[in-house]
Image 1: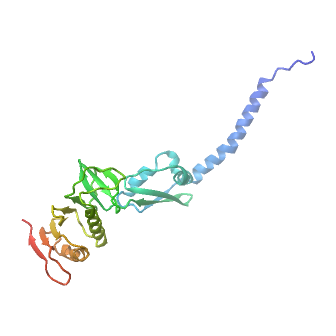
Image 2 (image 1 turned 90 degrees about the vertical axis):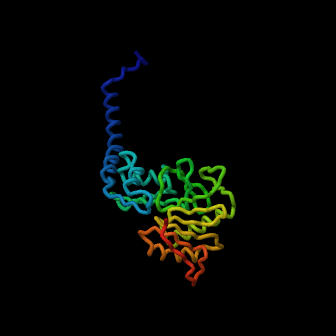
Image 3 (image 1 turned 180 degrees about the vertical axis):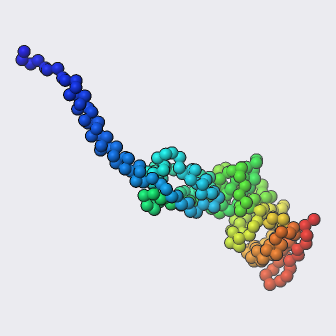
Length: 249
């Protein structure tokens, strides 16, 4: 009869579907396999990390099998991922070639820390609390003798005397400048400064500037290494010998 539709041949429909799937596989599958094998990472270089080992950084960066592909890893951290690692400001992943990547770590600049309720709170050169951790980093001095009502992460660290924080930052900058091994920076009720340097205690007193004293202290600590001395520099003036060193009791 006119107008009747012929029944579809199920075999021909299946063939068309299979043909389209095959074409799709060719179009997408072959490039995928090629990318997977052509960009397989064989070498990883980590630079800029001092508070973490290269292996620790890699463990944070490589989170899935897809991350073993240099192209995927580069695109992931270039446009999509926002990786959070304590004490790390940011990371950059660069493809050196198809089989090697370079990971550059930019660490947060930390001036010092305070111990509070069993945790160490680390602050930067502007007095902003940047991290809190149960881990104590030996190269960052612990500040003692401070009084504070509250400490809030990512906010400025407020102490009992506003000018005191300028002193703290000045001293911690000088510690870094002269590469001094200082464990603690302590203040008494008169805001006089005492440094803990290994087994040595250094009395700096209260000064308008600590630059000359800390410059001289570098040499004194070299001589006193391995010993336990109390080094009195409260009356130190550059060009004089007003330094008293006595064994710690």
